[in-house]
Amino acid sequence: MIAFVRGTVAQVVGDSLVIDLGSVGVTVQCTAATVLSVRHGEHIELMTSMVVREDGWTLYGFADPDERTVFEQVQTVSGIGPRIAMALLGSLGPDDLRRAVAADDEATVMRVPGIGRKGAQRLILELKDRIGPALGSGRVPTTTLAAGDWQAAVAAGLTSLGWSAREADQAIGAIDPESLAIATSGERPDVGALLKAALRTLDRS
Image (cartoon, rainbow, N blue to C red; front, side, top):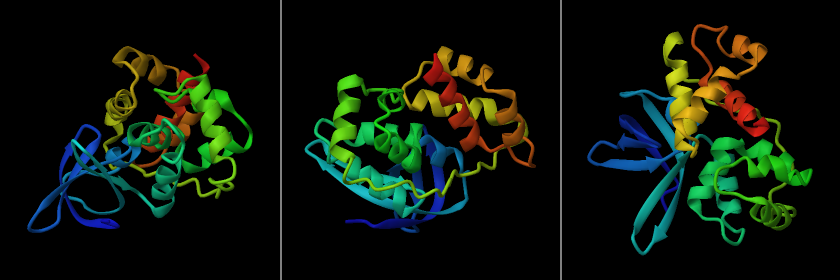
């Protein structure tokens, strides 16, 4: 198993990063927040999990060990593979998922593309005794994009999670003013926080 990769971001392609390890480049599938938090040429270290299928080997990368742990735990639920596991992490993150499972909150789980009511019920039931309590870390990568570029970055994140371009535009326009002001008040916009705020508007729609 490849436990982590450490190198330079050679390419950002959709929902994946190409990491230059020196003599070889490795493609790593990541959540939208992770992809949006880096730029070309930046040094990065990702925790990884290898998924082997008949049609190929795929390396999934995570900002920290907790994300990787939850990714692997979610796949123990019948009917859930790596694609939906990544969508869960991208939409909710580890702590929000833990809170949803603890509270039997089917509606929150169902906002993830690809998960219906039965799937949400099964996930909550099977993860109840495995996933543990929320850690309260609140870790969300902060992107280095320029202040005027966050809308395009959030839209890219939403479409990578399965929402249409129209839905993404509507969600961005519906971000509540308080969240928008907080996330854009610094020198650089916090695209991770803006992505979560946009996802909350989709949950209400």
